[in-house]
Amino acid sequence: MNSIKKKSKPKYRKDPAPELGKNAAEFAKHLDIGFDVAGLEMSDYRALIIQDERYGPGFSICQLDTNEHEPECYFQTGIAVFEDGIHWMVDLIEKEQAHGVSLVFNEEVTGSMAAMMVMTCILREEPLYAPTCPCCKEEEA
Image 1 (tube, rainbow, N blue to C red):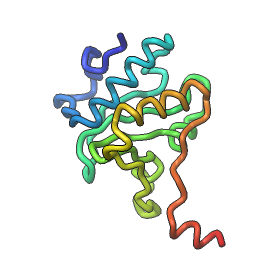
Image 2 (cartoon, one colour):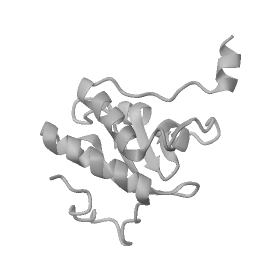
Image 3 (tube, rainbow, N blue to C red):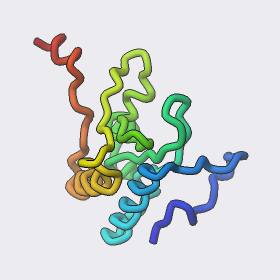
Image 4 (tube, one colour):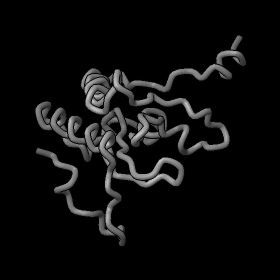
């Protein structure tokens, strides 16, 4: 398996990787299994354990193979999974323009269910994009 925990730390990291919470760990584990079964390498999708100042430890991944797409694709299709749900990298990076749109985990949408949704999007090469927030919908009207 392409286990996330078994991979060595990057050489530039001096501190230990943050420990993922239950939901993010469940998401990463199920995605790891999907990648293994599909014969894909998570490193081709820039899978990383990250630390965000607002959301804490999380798991980020691009939904498109970064070897076959421009770097801008990571910015547009990258997601970060934290305890509360899936956030899009574009919102995390462009904080002043972010509207905080996310796919929240609950009893109906668990980390494992979200992982299957994202894995399907990766296999079909049809990324899951952030939904339009209500204030943006009003601006478009």
